[in-house]
Amino acid sequence: MQASNTPTPETEEDADDTVSACVMVFNANDPSGAGGITADLTAIASVGAHALPVVTGAYARDTTEVVDHFAFDDEAVTEQARTILEDVPAQVFKVGFVGTPENLSAIAELASDYADVPLVAYMPDLSWWEEDQIDLYLDACNELLLPQTTVLVGNHSTLSRWLLPDWTSERSPTARDIAKAAHEFGVPYTLVTGIPLPDQFIDNVLCSPTAVLCSNKFERFEAVFAGAGDTLSAALAALIATGSELSEAATEALGYLDRCLESGFRPGMGQVIPDRLFWAHDDDDEEPPESAFEISPNDTRH
Image 1 (cartoon, helix red, strand yellow):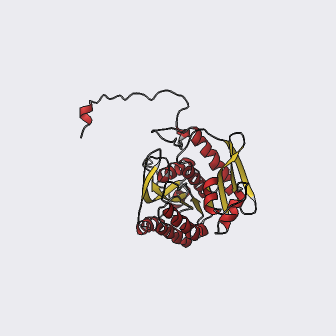
Image 2 (tube, rainbow, N blue to C red):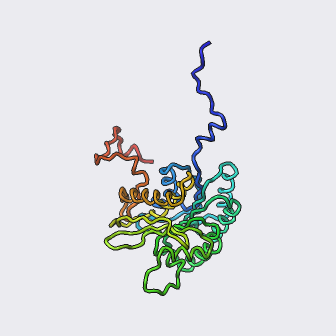
Image 3 (cartoon, rainbow, N blue to C red):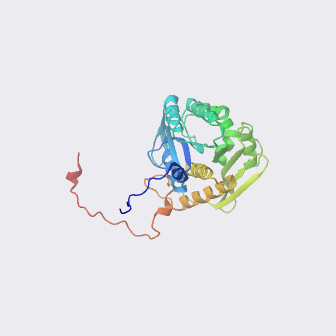
C-alpha cells in the first residue's frame, strides 16, 4: 500500500508553536483609514502580531478634520472583549480613543481582571472635541485608565497640556517631567514623542520618573500627518507582545513609524496618511496597470 500524500494534521502542541502573539485593541473606527482601529490593525499585522479589535465607536471625519464621534455603550464594548478573551488570550492590551468615561471604566475593569497583561495607552489630540467633554474624558483617564497603564504614549504638547496643566516654568517640560506626572497616577513608563529640537529635528523619549530608557531623534517631515500616534502605539504594543524588551520595542516602533511617514500618501484633500504597509510595495515608480476589463458606465449602475 502506498503512503498517503494527505498532510498529517498538526498536533495541538505543533499548532501552539505557530500562533501569533495577540494584541487586543480598543479604538474607534476611522472611515478615513488614517487612525483608529484601521491604524491598529494594519500596524499590528505589519509588525507580525495578530489584532483582536474591539470597536468602541466611530468617528465622522475626513482626512482634514474630525467632525464628530459616536460612542458604543459600555456593555457592547465589554461583551466584545470578554467574549473573545474567553477563547483567545491577549499578550498586550492597547487603548486608543474610546469615547466616554463609561467605556474607560469598562476597559479599566477588564484590565484589572487581567492584571498580568501589559496595557499600552495612547492619548490623541482631542482639540476637535467640546471642552467639557474633554475634561470629563481626561479626568476619567486619570482616575480609571492610568492606574492600569504600563506604557503611556503621546505627543509632547498633548501630554504636557493634560498632565502638567499648571506648568509655569519658562522652559518646556522634559520627557521626565511628563513621566513624573504620569507616575503620580500609577504609570511606570511614558513614551513622549515630537519633542522639538533645533535644525528641524524631533526627539522621542521613553522614560520612567527616574531615568531615560532610550532616546531616538528623527528629522521632521514637512507634511501634516493623521494617524501617526495610533500607528506608533499599535506597533509598540505588537512588539511587546512578541517578546521584545521595552526599550528595544520602542526604538523599533519609532523606526517603523519613520518609514511609514516617509512613505506616506495623501488619498484626499487633507492630511497625509502613514503607509503602514510600505514594505509590501515595489520600489519603482511605475504607474499601476490599467484594468484588463472594459466596463460600460451603465453596467455599473444599481
